[in-house]
View 1: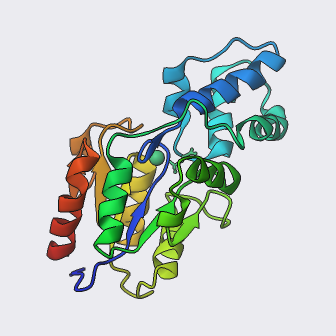
View 2: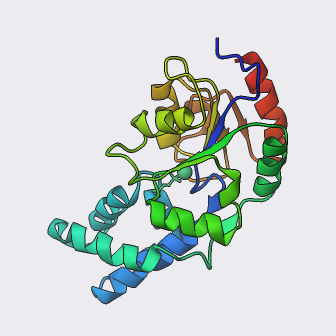
Length: 227
Ligand SMILES: O=C(O)COP(=O)(O)O
Ligand SMILES: [Mg+2]
């Protein structure tokens, strides 16, 4: 059982969960492709490449274009110079900030565990004025491992004071990477269905799913009570 007597930590994914960042990622990818004389990718294509961090994003971009595999490192570097502070096209999902505020007011320690590198993660949290809500932020370059490896999620729960043997709490995310990571870490998973997942909801293991953040505070209370 994973019952939380005191409010247990709730850790969030970022891209496709709290924010729709695909338009900024898409614009930065296409800026790099333009410099190389490569045809732009569609927003749907790029959205489908998000979830595993920038290295995987660019392996997928290379796979969809005629770019050489050897250019991967330079492409990632060129992308990061554009993307590290790109927030103009990014939007918070409706009611996400309100839900975070309600959970914080109720005493739930909040954390963030994303595969996005720390620099753009910090930039977007500052841009939306929500950095202070999170007791810990783990980015895609904070540890040698990335989701779906359980290490980043475990690190987030440890930083929020969870017991290392039997970490208690909930992970809220949108993608197959998050689901697998939660499963690997033994943490119940709450699935936001309007993000970037590719599988149908019923093919993903989750404690509960939701399509509106207005429902999240109640779902957290219910999931925390069941354990
Ligand atoms: O940057 C990515 O590829 C994914 O980021 P996320 O872990 O916040 O969904
Ligand atoms: Mg995500």
